[in-house]
Amino acid sequence: MSVDLSHVDLVRERMHVGYDEARAALEASHGDVVAALARLEKTHPPTNDLLAIGGEIMDEVQRLLDRGVIRKIRVKLGRRTLKEIPVSLTALGALTVGLAAVLISLFAIELDRD
Image 1 (spheres, helix red, strand yellow):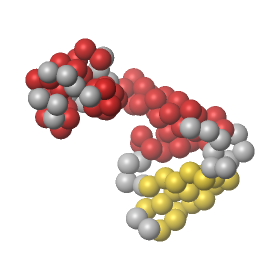
Image 2 (cartoon, helix red, strand yellow):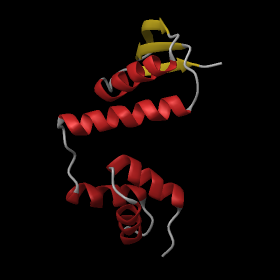
Image 3 (spheres, rainbow, N blue to C red):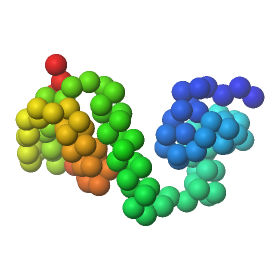
Image 4 (spheres, rainbow, N blue to C red):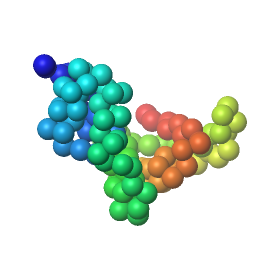
């Protein structure tokens, strides 16, 4: 069975596994992403240790830096804006947003870009 590369990438990113494991899980699940994630979760339980959290933060920071310059960080809870922070340094802004995104999942964070 052939699987879609975007599905493989999604499973890889979500479960922190290699291409082979993600592809195998998708093939065993007949291309169903949710079933593949559930299958991998059985063999790769989520870890809450500091290294895993640090890795997630670094992945999020890299993703944000790859998308371009961040001008403003807006932290929201529901529709209510809690804090709006102007950002002049891209890396600092990405690090701040990365930390917040990983550690505070209840908040919505919006980024203003050029």
